[in-house]
Length: 267
Ligand SMILES: NC(=O)c1ccc[n+]([C@@H]2O[C@H](COP(=O)([O-])OP(=O)(O)OC[C@H]3O[C@@H](n4cnc5c(N)ncnc54)[C@H](O)[C@@H]3O)[C@@H](O)[C@H]2O)c1
Image (cartoon, rainbow, N blue to C red; front, side):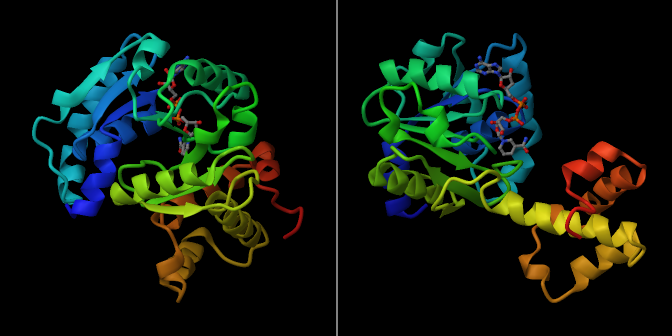
C-alpha cells in the first residue's frame, strides 16, 4: 500500500461499527482487511456469529480485491454498550435501522463521549446528516458516507455533508474512503436518494414503463441495456438479473410496486 494511503488509515486505526446487518458486516470486513481495529456495536444476541460468518464467507472476495485475509478477526471485538463501544474511536461508521429517531438519539449519545477528532459517518440511504445531527453536540464531524451493497465490493461512496458539517470533516471522509480503495464523491446538496439511487430509479422506472407498454420484452431490455454503448456507465446491479427480478414483481400486478416506482406517472 502507498505510504500516503497508509498514513491516512493510521489516523483512523480504531473504528467503531454501529449496526452489523448487511452493510455493517461488509464495512467491518473491509476495515479489518485494511488493518484497522474494529469494535462492533449491535444489540442482536447472535451478532458475533453473524459477523464472523460474514467475514469468513467473504475471504475469497477480499483476496480477489488484493487485500490481506490472514488473521482478520484478530483486531475484531464486540461491545454491546454504546458509550463504551465508541470510547477512543477515531471513526464511527453507523449502519443501524433507517429510523430518524434512532439515528438522532444515537448521535446525541455518541457526541457526548466521542473524542473531538473522531469522524462520524452514517451509511444512511435517505436520512440526511442535517436531520440526524439535530440534537447532537458535535455536528461538525458528522456526515453521510453512503455506500452501495456490499460496501466491501462496490466502489462508490456518496459523501454527503449536512448544514453544520465542517469542510475539514468532508475532506477527512473523502481521504479515508479513498485510502480504503473506494471511489468517494461529494454530493453538494442534501436531496432524498442522493445521486446514484435517483439515477438508478429513473432508469428502473423507464424499464418498467417500456415493458408494460409492450415496447420491449424483459430479456430484450436486458440485452439492450447491457449491450448498448452505455455499458461502461451501467453499474453491475442494473445488469441481467436485477432488471428481471424487479420487472417480474411489477408484471405480477403489484400495484404497490408500480406506485413505488412511479410507473405510468411520467413515462
Ligand atoms: N441494504 C442496503 O442496500 C443499503 C445500502 C446503502 C446504505 N444502507 C443503509 O445502511 C443502514 C443499515 O442498513 P442494512 O441494510 O444493513 O440494515 P440491516 O437491517 O441489515 O441491519 C441493521 C442492523 O442494526 C442493528 N441494530 C438495531 N438496533 C440497533 C441499535 N440500537 N444499536 C446498534 N445496532 C442496532 C440490527 O440488529 C441490524 O443488525 C441503513 O441506514 C440503510 O439506509 C443500506
